Image (tube, rainbow, N blue to C red):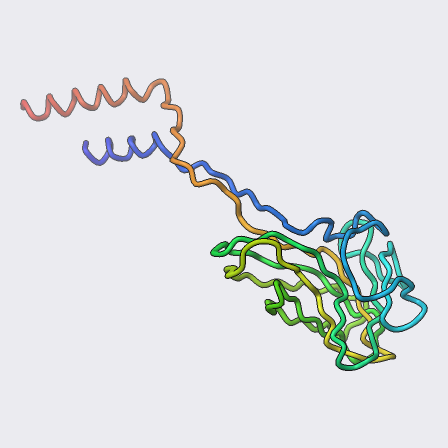
Length: 211
């Protein structure tokens, strides 16, 4: 009897908060096309020479990882410059767990592979190297708890150099965190017949004690 009542009581409450994932990056999928908002040390004109980029719908057989646009980069060939290929200011809070994710593909098919250092506020949170397989999108991600607060630059810094290779594409850049509110359990409506059932079982329990 007591076990049944305890089980029935559990039916009266359940946690009901759903996840609310917030992305701090604006248009990390480049869906604004050539109007996509980011900072870069590179100059437009990906087919002209090294150290250049374009936001495109297709490029030499590469199609977006998702959506309609992506960033194509003709990597730099000068050493010791560490240029920033993509950067955007984001507001973070110390003690909050964040997840960085993005997709990258080798564009040229020649070595060297592109090597990027992804940094938040100048602190590296992920080092990523493109695959040797040409035009194959790869997903990269990292999660960590921030020790920084306020506006910080999320930057993709190019560490590799090479005139022939070192060409790559970027898409679906995101910096997310869970903004779900902490709420008390939400009551589940009591089935109409349950009170009568509990009352009947309670009466049976009384009768059993009298026997």
